[in-house]
Structures are given as structure tokens and as C-alpha cells.
Length: 59
Image (cartoon, rainbow, N blue to C red; front, side, top):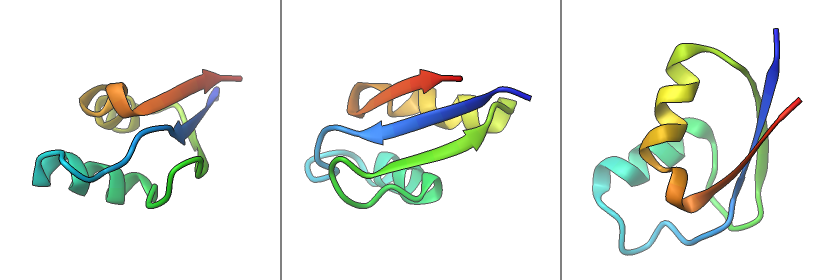
């Protein structure tokens, strides 16, 4: 399967509690923190909800 690397570029502060919860589910707590995931529907859906805060690269 393909992998997706997400990097938190903008702060969690000032966002809705749902968006903060989504970032916590992705394991992103600090700016410039990166995580890699397998490309599944659930991960892609979570990324779509907070795409304005992230940088996404596929490999």
C-alpha cells in the first residue's frame, strides 16, 4: 500500500475542539512534527478535515 506523510505546519490553537481532536488522533501535537500512515479511507478522511493545517506528501 501507499504511504502518506503528514506534517503539522500551523498551530492547533484557535481551531475547533473537533479539529484538535482529529490532530490528536493523527498523533500531531507540535508544529513541524511528522507522521507516516498507510493510505486508508479513515486516514484520508481525517486529513481532509484539517488539510488547512497540514502538508501532505505521498510516497
